[in-house]
Image (cartoon, rainbow, N blue to C red):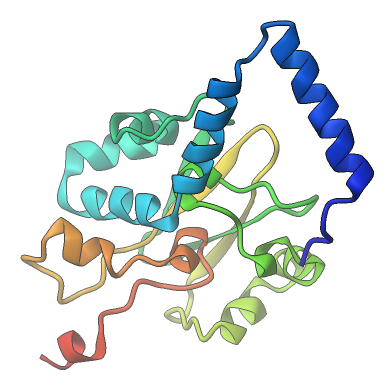
Amino acid sequence: MSAPARAESIARLEKLLAALIAKGVVTEAELAERQASTDRASPEIGARMVARAWLDPAWRAKLLANGAEAAEAMGVSMAGAPPLGVLEDKPGLHHLVVCTPCSCYPRAVLGYPPSWYKSFEYRSRAIRDPRGVLAEWGTSLPPGTKIRVVDSTADYRWMVLPMRPEGTEGWSEDQLAALVTRDALVGVALPVLPMAAAAE
């Protein structure tokens, strides 16, 4: 868990913002809109992107070619954000996203990072022992599956395009998006059918 901001840090930030506003670099309205945009961001956006990719091959190609452009096409502002890469899971290949130096995370499409993602333990062990980390999450991969750990950085952010679960043929985008959790979007979990659906 991150420590709360110190009073002197907040005061310094407020002075910087006041100077930027006074010089006309940014307006209060722009700052308010950026904050509102950040607050609106959630894993549901990433889940919707994945569900659409499962249904539409052309959209899938667009998403894999340029994640930020695909997000913009869905009405998500990526202004000022680093490029967004999308890692496609395939049979025999699973991706796990980590930020080893700090907590770089695609907030525009996943919202705020969870505390575990920022923890030193996850950041160090995801690189050293990814299979062990996944096992602790209860994520079981087929034998022989290669795990590719990808580092998000200040210059480039990543999210995962997991494989579509079997048994979801004919499902709508809304139904599919409901299967995709924040954890699946960074690779610590897999999309899983609800018990009732899996039993049918």
